[in-house]
Amino acid sequence: MKKMIVVGAALILAGCVTTETAQFKPSAGQETMIRDGNPAIVSKKSRSIILARPASREIQNGGRPVYIIAAFNSGSEPVLLSTSNIHVEQFIDGQPAGDMKVMSYNDLVQEERSKQVLAAVLVGVAAGANAASAQNAGYYNSRSTIYTPRGSATVYTTGYSPAAAAIAQGNASAQNAAMMASVVDRGQQNMQALEQQVLKDNTVMPGEWIGGQVHIAPPAKTAGAKEYKITVTIGSDVHEIDVSQSAAGS
Image 1 (tube, one colour):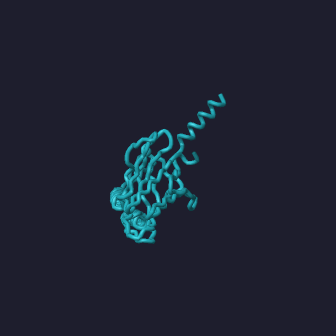
Image 2 (tube, rainbow, N blue to C red):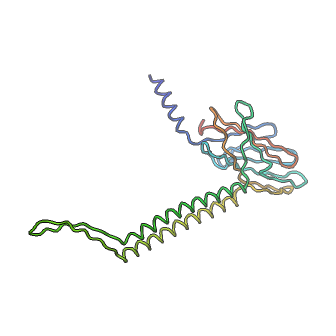
């Protein structure tokens, strides 16, 4: 009975796992390390060095993995670092199981713009509801009972208060303006973060480091750890980085 309880509790806890962590499996010419509490890997080739690490300590289960990838040009000629030259492939039971799309900067900007359009539509609907409610706020009605020597009677009173309507409309306008300002401000912050953090196409000069965030489509669900390979081609060098992504703490 105790064993059954322990197994049942373990299954419940497993079902509650919402985050995962990534670990690197180094091959020849590669070395793992810890940077700011995150696992990292250095891959060295004849003309370049690649440093990769997760952008955060935990990856949302079912969410996009985001990595910081930086390249150093140790050769004598300029080389291109581009998301189009970064390829990610998932493996299940050691066999190729499909590509995981690498999102370009333009992909992410377009996605953010679509989110902002949707947010603006939702704010517009809310603002319309606020305005309609405020417009009707000046109307009032009441019911009272009057008692007379001849008995009681119910009296209904209706009317319209311009002052109450003006106050309600002023409050609604302020709320609508605040909602729209919040959406615009959040959108600008998100765009700025993309501009500052996401990897874009860059020519890496000899002796120069360049890097940024690389957003990758979520791996397919598997019974165990999610295994995938990140391949970074820079110049004539090809860096292959093996990743194992599994439940946090496992």
